Length: 297
Image (cartoon, rainbow, N blue to C red):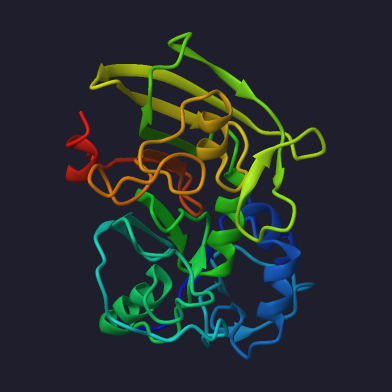
């Protein structure tokens, strides 16, 4: 399958504009993406012929821009593995991530991550150059919806949507105890724990962090919460719930680890809404609670 291209048919309204103007303002390509395309033989074409971005277009012509990957530069190995796809098109993929799978390769996890499994999936589709372009990440223990772009242009557009109304994520979690009040906002800055590479804590010199929560069910001395992030700090939900005295059930880092109950923090990315990076269409997805979290209730 050929790398992804965006095409624009030149109508009378667009006649007389430069290629640069159309690529930036009509197709929404950034300067970074444009610079990469200019280096490719067929990166920017007009009626199939390579052109400079200063060229002026005429009615009836077709402008084409190569936005897809022409090589994999991440260095991530392609390895088949557990992968539940919720949605896929030429620009993005939405995955329902299983708990226990890291989002991205790192120390101790070089070939058993979502990134590895996605590249193997792209290979099976006949897309050997499509690389891993995560828009956001989920902790290893967190399950649920996660989106990855299929090229740098889509990744850039989607990352710019993060923490805006265009990109909305809703999490479900089970915590120890029942928060009071039953709904509220935790507004507390988060920073690293001194001398720790992983742990975070609420601290006055940390980065601003806000989490909205709502209790939607109570049972067995625990509560099922609906949560939304206004910011995106590492471990934000886990740190904020522990901060108010209600750590997530099973959270080995900020609460009490109990494998008899659940083998990971009880956190699930349940709903995801985004605006498509190319078409502008609003897409909405949901993923039900997995059985290990349901068993707590």
